[in-house]
Image (cartoon, rainbow, N blue to C red; front, top):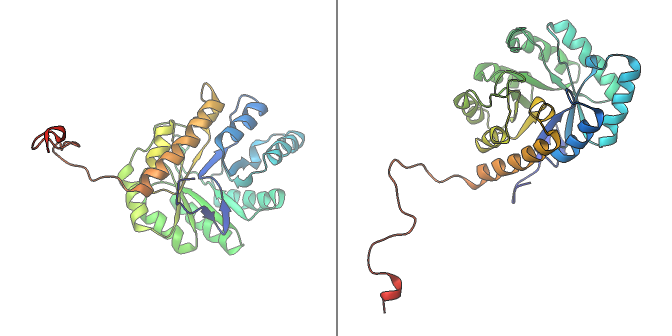
Length: 264
């Protein structure tokens, strides 16, 4: 945590880390556990519908419980409001949490969230007492409407899921940050390098969520460590307030006058 920083709070829950980590796509359960530990994350996301058999799901759940992290279940792979709401209800029952990362996709090619269905599902889930963390695009108007519905946390993408392209539209993300100063914002999806996470933190985002960037790296554990450091560095850079950019060079050591060792 950056010096003089206040801790991140999600729906009243105080967290020690600004890095959220996913639990899918790892080459083995042990690599997943080692990567989660190396990331120093406070929250791990899980997908109920991707666990296969009941036995496999139970084994996976026991592994996740071993981490001691807060669980953020998600509705990954849903394409309709009914499907997402039903899965969210199942997640609450299984994981005993009101948190839900709401993913509701509208396009099979780039996995872009369906903004209309996302708003409808959010309205239903909030009415049912869920604390919704919606995964959305970097569209300011959609973000504003999600906040109006009662979302305290938003998760706009940096780029389409799993692409590793980084922040494709930093301008949009900055505008969302500026226009929603009291909303907790996480960049979710599309990051590939620690520098991408650092950039997101430098423009004032409160946290980042990663999965593929770590799980599909050549050395997931080392990459997790890299992202942990990058998130800290980016947050420190944001809090420190960067020097203003200049069009012309300005020497850091003035050259006017006589060298100090020649002066009386």
